[in-house]
Image 1 (cartoon, rainbow over the protein chains, first blue to last red):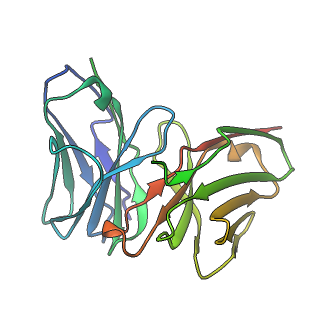
Image 2: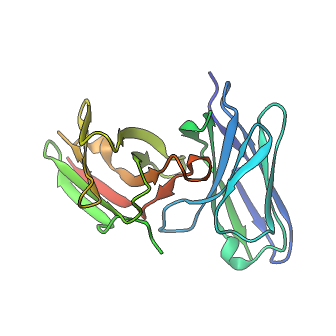
Length: 111
Length: 114
């Protein structure tokens, strides 16, 4: 049973650019959630996808968007990057919205 | 508005002794609580959970206590081992919350000294 894998592990972007982060969910899981963890803080909920539809969103602006594909993998897109977007982005998958398994995250640095 | 708070940013304990981590919440709609452990460069890993219909749950060295009237939960680790050194996050969710999203506390860094 494979776990949750995220790519890339690290990247550096310039303010104003766009970025796409990817997540492969654990086998058998149909729900994917994305979290942002700023340095020294706990993860904050961005949004969740259940069977390819957005199913809940946290307090993040519309420039944070996502997709879930038929194989339940997911993308997080962030447009017009700001310095404060620098954080660890975590993907978590689950089966029917229970029992989350987290990936190791993507460390995004905006300069 | 921090709905889940871990007021102790760090904790140092001797190997073999008890570690007690605390967490407070404000949202009465939370009915399920979880503890996660996080090592550097890894994602959070699930440790133990408790439903609001219980006040205690045990799993090996880990016990979680829930005091609903005080909106407080704690994680006890007995005995503490050097491999327990990590950051611990308390998280809460509610059946009525969108997609059962998790609301996390800020974390407590635990150092277990040999």
